[in-house]
Image 1 (tube, rainbow, N blue to C red):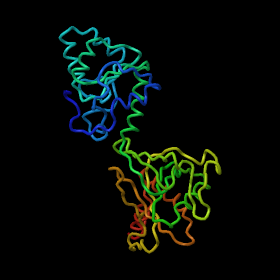
Image 2: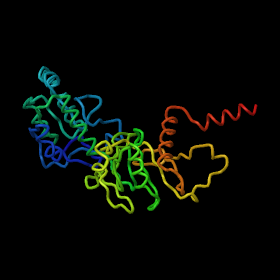
Image 3: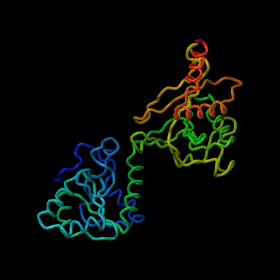
Image 4: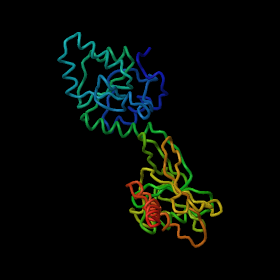
Length: 319
């Protein structure tokens, strides 16, 4: 029976799966431990400050993937027997999923005994400590992140990740095509996939099946990369703004709200994303309006609000 493991968290990725999928590119060797163990990596690191995802051995702040390199192994080898046993107990009792030995090194045989006792695998790699940490952090962040598929068109507009949403028939794809022709970039049409890769960061990507394609009513499926070139496509972007297209009758602003941006928040995977409702009506240039909304959103993020500035001018003129 394992001691001191993540009993209160659901395993999202088994250690053997990480090993199998990265054996070649990370030059991994399963040195010790039960490959059939049910222990593994969880999403605990995304919601708790008590445990990290990947890092060097730390007696205070444990990591799910503990990395030991040349410096750490020298420290263990120089310790006397009593201190060594105490260090090994602390290392193997931590809330970890695996111990990784970097730099092509082989750990002392005493590690194997503790690995079997605490059911904690030891995996060796020829990569340097820094490179191994970077590679594992990237892989685990992508693999463990909470994911959600949303209906809409995800684009990069003026370097901002923008999700265009709205009911079917309002012209989301036509708007996306117009934006692409104006120099902005398509990420995903219809079903972009979003993943929470940090406490306040949502990353959006495109499913492989839909990459480069945009479906436009009357034109069918278009390959944007072939039509406009590589610069018209973006592989991923952090979601920062949602533009929600609505029929005009759904948005009848009160007179006191006309001067203010109709921005609200939409919760995506636990992160509040700024959302702007944009009425659709004949004669409105939606592409220009989206560009203006994005630029105004950036100004607000940087501390300038045009509505508040104008209202303040009005107050001063009336004094």
